[in-house]
Image 1 (tube, rainbow, N blue to C red):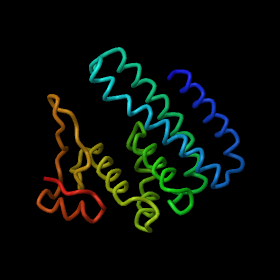
Image 2 (image 1 turned 180 degrees about the vertical axis):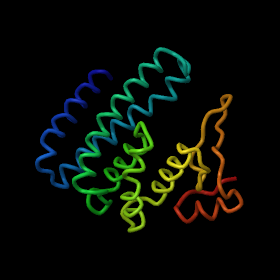
Image 3 (image 1 turned 30 degrees about the horizontal axis):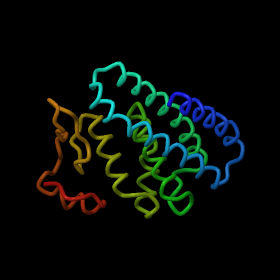
Image 4 (image 1 turned 90 degrees about the vertical axis):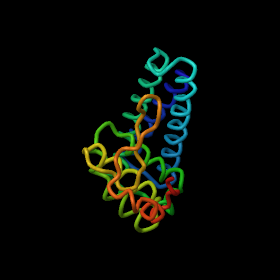
Length: 187
């Protein structure tokens, strides 16, 4: 996997160097689909690594370092696209590439980056060009990171080996709110 990561990082660097001068939507779509694929491959390794070696293992530390490196490089590529083109919708670059933009910004290391681009995602989602569920998920993450109550119940954490939802603003109306943005019902 280390060799694949090196090849991917080299490809991203090459794409960045050429993409800042002239990007067409096809090239952007390809770049974002590659980012999405690498993102999934890395994150799909998390639970098997945790199950085999444990959360506090050297193997998990190594994987976390790979994920952080990938996320930082992908963030550079995606913010360059966003700054030049705005939040490209599904009709422009396809569903996979559109989702890649969301995931990279969602995984940004700090809330200021999510806040900077959230209005672009929100406008895209309200226009039917991005998923409303992505907008809701990012909104909740921003709120939780700011110490506020989440709206849609998308954010949770591990507590004593169990998933626990962060507090929700309007728990009595949560399923109606989730339905509005295409999220499944909570029990």
